[in-house]
Amino acid sequence: MILLMAAVAALWICHVVPAEEPDPDIALEPAHVIINPWRFHIPPTKRQGVPGIERTANGRLWVIYGRDVESTRNYQVLIRSDNNGRSWSHPKLMILPREGVRAMSAAIWIDPIARMWVFWGQSFGTQDGRYGIWAITTDDPDAENPQWSRPRRLGDGIMLNKPTVLSNGDWLFISSVWKADHSIKVYATTDQGKTFNLRGTANVLPPETRGPDEPMIVERKVGSLWMLVRRQGMAETVSHDGGKTWSAVKQSSLRHPTARFFLRRLESGALLLVKHGPLDKRVGRTDLMAFVSDDDGQTWKGGLLLDEREKVTYPDGVQAPDGTIYIIYDHNRTPDGEVLMAAFTEEDVRAGEAVSTNVRLRAEVARLPAE
Image (cartoon, rainbow, N blue to C red):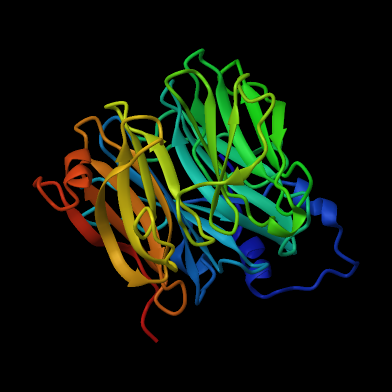
């Protein structure tokens, strides 16, 4: 367990300027991981969002989200719910970066051996062109006070997604070093997370279309890997050798704004896609909708509207054993800073409306206090 004295947090809050010029390599050092932070040690913010969600075997929901999003003071907080999202705890963990380092773009994932991983990216300043995937794990995410491992740096890039477990047992962790050649990096572990190797990269061309790639991978039923990429809409690439080589990243037929989406395989075998707007219409960051595909993304069905408002962004999701799908997202990061959850089933998505008793929309997880 990694503890931080109150004095360290106070120094961060007060913006103490180091005596010497900051060293960019401090981003290669772990952020402070603070267990059960006192409320008055959590820095105030006027902007929050970019959430991730996971569900344990016993039904506990965990949510992580960023505060001071898109600034050099970006940090992360982890909260939980033991009543299916009806109410939420105060932060159980805080990832507080060192002075001059940004802790950004977090994700949570429970692996096949029931460990929960918490990931975040680190950058010196807003964007340092290298970034870094950092992770901690707990063997018992249902414990009252989970014990956490020491932070590990897994590789370069930002990993704003859940890893993909292949049919052969390999785990793929996908990241992006924004706006660079071969920006998308696919790291693989064949020993359940003990070691990682860079398996392959995907290159976004032409260079002027590059941005925060925010890629996501699914394994198709025929064995190939399909990757969707944020690129002035939505782009795609395919690998036929387990992620070692990738086809040219090309524009997808799916219409979408330049924004994050969510792609995952459901327990039924169908694919779930959460995106903005209808399949054949490009809209702004509005009309967050869910669709399913029975043919690995060739065609899509349904269209359940989760939130029709503007500035609804960055969906992430998980499915419970009973079939309930939980999608977390943010709304109006400034000044509302809402983190919201939608719960529904695959049947609701296919029908394009609420047909089950599981539907809950716009359930509040967190928000900034009114001024």
